[in-house]
Length: 191
Image 1 (cartoon, one colour):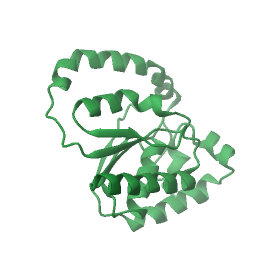
Image 2 (cartoon, rainbow, N blue to C red):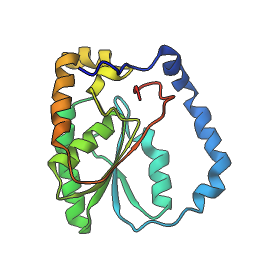
Image 3 (cartoon, one colour):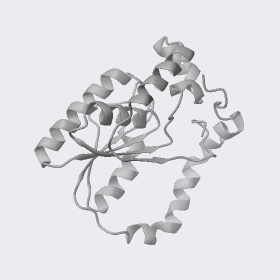
Image 4 (cartoon, rainbow, N blue to C red):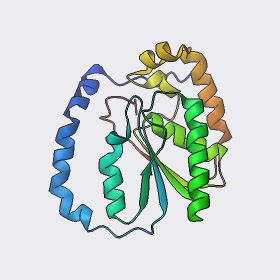
């Protein structure tokens, strides 16, 4: 077990309700953001967090499209935490997009969506160029997240046993580059 990890504090969890203010602050950087270099039309699939749908990633998708990337939402609907099924579904979507565009796919996942993206990279390496995760747990799975206990009840899993499975899976590694974006102020995932 990873004894030095813990879910974030309730104080930080309550801070998540101020997220719309963070988005408003982005407007101050809009000129700089819109002047970033244009992309290469590479295919990107966005995977959203637990219990969210495509609308949660819509601002990022729009921004990536503005930068000339071919960004699409995963075609799996709301993320209900069906991780194994979602890995297969996103893997199939990645394979198809890779075949259609003759280009490797970049996967960007937020929170649980990032976990799924990492697993797709591990299991479907021939179609994934890179993985970018946003506020995604790396060690311990849901055990060290705010909604972890609720997720465990919903999916009827033992968090300690699941943590060991995650640790074993992480030992396998994968070859694609991964970019991990996180914040010490994240109210959901312990950093």
